[in-house]
Image (cartoon, rainbow, N blue to C red; front, side, top):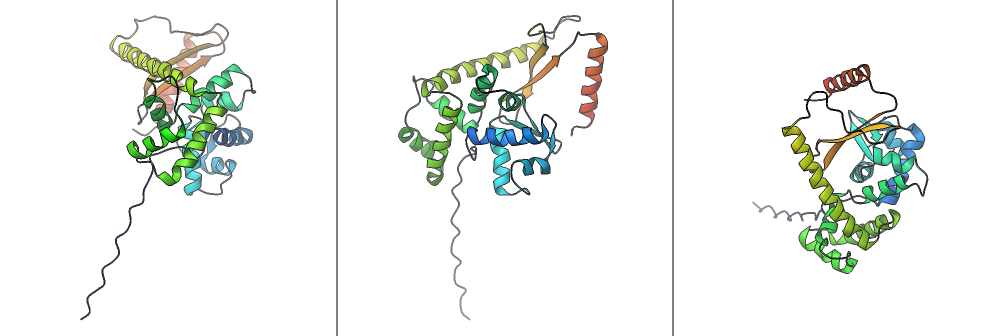
Length: 255
């Protein structure tokens, strides 16, 4: 009886760590398509995919959604896709608007792999060249060398699109890390020492009263903020209505 010939061993596919499938410039163009079609209203996932140029969910479509999420432009809840505050500030404001520029900078620094690059060179006065960053990505993050050139091109174009220099990102990385630490400490302190009854919430501004407070963390450790804006005078009735709305929302969320 003839022996079965041995099966060739399957080669393991070299996968890079998670990174945006394209840069911020392209991600903003995709977000603008969603805004042009549905405005601020949440889109069904199927509709959002069509706005992005895809007929159904597949690998490329999934990577596009993932890229927009990694830059903080969209969020997905209950099967619906909606623009985040950062996304709205970028697509709804005109070029040159300070709030738009700040949102672009914030979006550029959100992807986890981008943060790793910034943090790796925080002690220096600027980011080094791609010839230096590339081998570090391969050696430490196990980045696929075949994907490296395209990733670094998107990374550099993202910085340019957001108006950031190599010096800027190192400086901003330090500032944002300290701010995140302070926000975490504040959230912990507030949880341990809640404000006394009747204490006034920390409003920002006079015309549009806003509350922005950290309420938790995402699975990858980023701080989640709750932003509430009151366009008119506050009253107990308004706050009771808000409380009722949040309670109703909570009932429809998975436990």
